[in-house]
Image: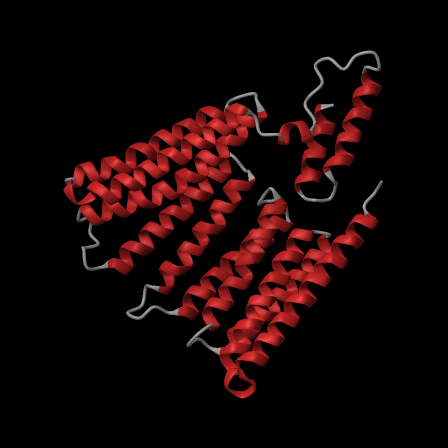
Length: 330
């Protein structure tokens, strides 16, 4: 049963097998192994997905802690000495990291899931801690060399996000890597004297391609969240590089990336990927119309075209979702 459970978990995480079908298979195998007793049976995926009171309280505690930290920084930051400022951010970072590590050893699924949230918050707090450290103490960067320090913080945050994913490969850790990659792209773009949209966008695009490639060969898991969030970076990267004063060619790349994401979603039978692709295509096309055709066709016409695109996108999503449900195994 343990071997079957491992396969089922992989198939449901990758989106190949719906959770309801996986529950049926578990029940069938459990009955076949012991038709007279269900005692000691492992919880189903549906049962594991239900948040419990303890999990909810932990989430509430994380929110209260972060809000309190933000309030303290906003009210008393200027009154604190350098060591106190560093302690204010480092202490909760280490505390929440330790809580996540402790929860990860729990046998209760909801507590293990809560460890993901704890480590997700840890990544953000680590970035803040490293930033405060470089801002308060001269570690070779200098107070005026903000771009170099920013790149150091972003790189460190990206590596920490990857390290926490290696220990606990989960949905929130994948999202943390994607967000850290977005941060790294902005830091690379800020490396030059003037912020380079092209450099930032290309960095994000490279990180995305690597992420999707690793997800496809099952090195970056869970595959579902990895595919969705790194596909989103595919659109964000060239979009940032082309929007505003950027090169119009990057806007075309962003549109192609959105179309490719839709095709990827259809290939993987993933409604989430299709939704990301359609949403990205809508944003890219609307931006393109207002930037390049507003003076020619007028704002009202641009709004009409944009509304038509949105209606078409909704109809496409509704049709695809209906087709997915129709073709889903009974």
